Length: 194
Image (cartoon, rainbow, N blue to C red; front, side):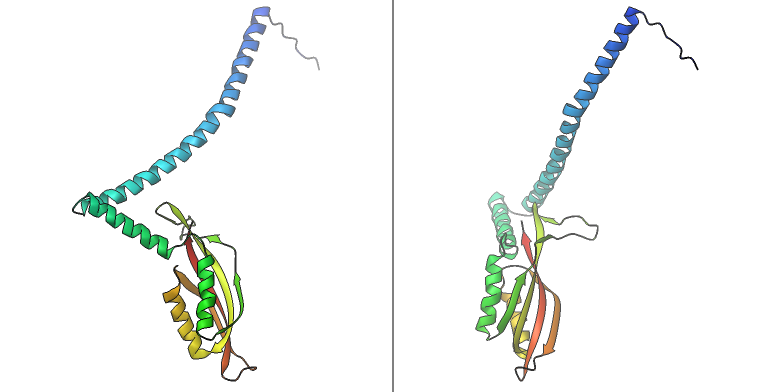
């Protein structure tokens, strides 16, 4: 099979080279300038939408208040409440879990915090409160105590901890080594704002 030989004039060669050069520069422009800028613009749009959402929340508070000072006071109260119920660090809460147990004469066999994880809604999206991500820290604790003390301990933890906490699991068994006592394994989720 013979290949066809195409005769190209010098001006046609120049046109093809110029067209290829323009295409090459267009691809470079798109790859190195347009595409990264597009990603940055998308991120800025997302940040703008979040900021506009926060502004709407402030405007709603201002509309229902008597003045600017009252609205600022309400915003500060809300922020203090969120900061107190959703701490940024878990160390204080972990310390309180052990301290409350000691005060109630409960023997803590083990206290194991897990890895911090994002709290997701039903659709799998990360939950945000005032622009901060909600995370939870799973905590597993094993204690030996009387049953009535265990109930009091769980109630006291709910009241004493500076963070929202939920009991994820609770397993209570009779402890044969100590008459009248139980060995309990409890799983908590401690919620944080990061």
